[in-house]
Amino acid sequence: MLANYHTHTYRCNHASGTEEEYILRAISCGIQIMGFSDHAPIPFEEGYNTGWRVPKEKAQEYVDTINALKKKYKDKIELHVGFEMEYYPDCFDVMLRFVKSVGAEYLILGEHYLGKENDGRRSSGMPGHTGDSITEYVDLIIEGMKTGKFLYVAHPDILNYIGDDERWEREMTRLCKVAKELNVPLEINCLGIRDNRTYSSEKFYKIAGQVGSKMIVGFDAHDVASAYDGESLEKIKVLKEKYNLNIIDKVEIKGL
Ligand SMILES: [Zn+2]
Ligand SMILES: [Zn+2]
Image (cartoon, rainbow, N blue to C red; front, side, top):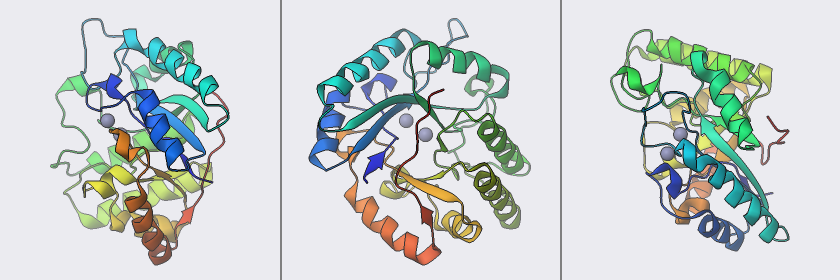
């Protein structure tokens, strides 16, 4: 089974390619299940536009487009429509209600900020996080997983932490253990592998392998070519052996 639930589109303004282009690439590479998970809009703050999310006025069109393509390609590929979304405790309910209202089938948890992005704090991927930020990050991920609304955790080691190594290890172990208990898979993020980013790190996979958390591959495609990423899959085969990773190949989408 070849499945990928992490696909963006031009609609979020920092990726390229239409839904159909991603689908054709996926079909030609033998993908059997493909999910779109573009960045969820923040629908509640009038006048505030993050610029890297699907604008809320475009969210319905995004879902409708994919639903139409689902029918068009039903004999070739199983398609799903969802969003990648943060767990921001004070607005989770509003965001969830919005994505449900447009007909999203699933969410993946990508914690791109600690606290909402308009409060002036650096993004999770930016270097410079120290001290308690790692605990804050893991607490948020755990709370998010406990809502039961997220299919899996995207790039679980995205927080670019430059503090104490032991503390990082302790917190990442806690994250992996709770994910295992809650049966929420953690992503092996191919964008991190492709771009050699600080996340998708071997030190994280070592911990996940020791804990035995379930893992799932996500291409995190921001361009059409990455709707299938064979090079990363080859690297993941090596990681799987090296760290004894418990990789599953599909997740059940049960609706929101
Ligand atoms: Zn993105
Ligand atoms: Zn992400």
